[in-house]
Image 1 (cartoon, helix red, strand yellow):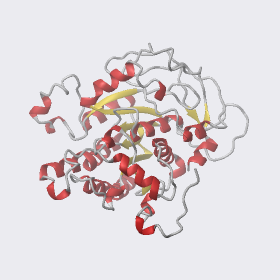
Image 2: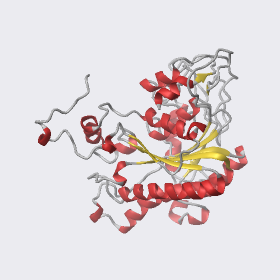
Image 3: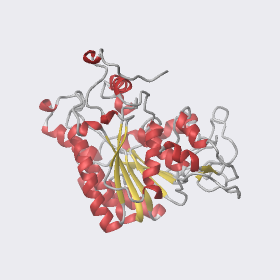
Image 4: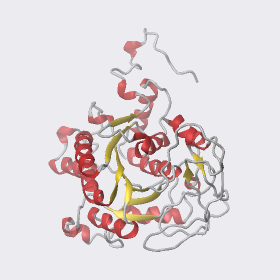
Amino acid sequence: MASTMASGLHFATARPYVSSSHRGLRLGATILGYDSKVASWAKLASACHLSCMLPFRGISSSSGLKSDKPVTKAMSEDSQSKPSSGLPIDLRGKRAFIAGVADDNGYGWAIAKSLAAAGAEILLGTWVPALNIFETSLRRGKFDESRVLPDGSVMEISKVYPLDAVYDNPDDIPEDVKTNKRYAASSKWTVQEVADSVKQDFGSIDILVHSLANGPEVTKPLLETSRRGYLAAISASSYSYVSLLKHFIPIMNPGGSSISLTYIASERIIPGYGGGMSSAKAALESDTRVLAFEAGRKNKIRVNTISAGPLRSRAAKAIGFIDMMIEYSLANAPLQKELSAEEVGNTAAFLASPLASAITGAVIYVDNGLNAMGVGVDSPLFEGLDIPKAKH
């Protein structure tokens, strides 16, 4: 899949972005980027053809500040007359809303960058309590390097919205949350209000990404999980997707695509991934199939979920054993390499593109094939077998 994307993407360019010497860039709310060191981005950038773009318009949020930096977006057609090879991932003219981006090292961030590299306009929804830190980090240049696209230019984010997908509308907000100081500086952050704001600001979207999960008791075994903790995991990690689709579908253009993120714990036992989170992921996958039918029949919207392997993200580190899971995957997966976030991002770009026009209701595994394994081949029980290993 990555090679398909690499062969067809052609980039329109502006002046190269210099991350270290221009940290005074004025930011309104956020610019999105991703880790610039990854190999698959180099593949995306290979065989690209360059032409000038308009200056960077900047970022929009409540502060309304703008930047005059140039920006580059990926294009699937060569702006020159030179013929291209391969199948292009062309999302020019499409607009994506990615819910659940609060830093620059998670899957949501990577998905947004891949979509932008294919030409899509990017909108973000960031958890309200994390919004101030996120925006401050961007303004201070903390994410300068990770905002750079493969061709060296800066990626544009049109707007960032405060979002808490646990609440559908203002009537759902309890009084203690309304008066919480972490929410005091933001407004219109329930799912319904954000969808209404996006409609007012942009009219419509084509791509909806759910990159949200939270289980307050995730470190507890299921037998020790409280009803409140279990239901909280379901609410934040699976029903939030139903709510997002319910409120965003009216502003999604026919032929659009919706993507969520799941995990193999939905169907296999992962000790330590507790608090109802395995149940929440199972519900998310079941809902993906039902939503694919309903949204497909009523609105011509495709609904898929990506079952991603372990990543050393900020959210995953909170579970406490992410390094162990990565080591396990390296030892046991058919592909013995560490999974990169951009590999998941590139898969999302494919699923959002016309190349995946017949794919809906699917769980797509992006985990180096770990889901296919029935046993852990690193077990001492298999020491006597001649098990192939990767050559480094």
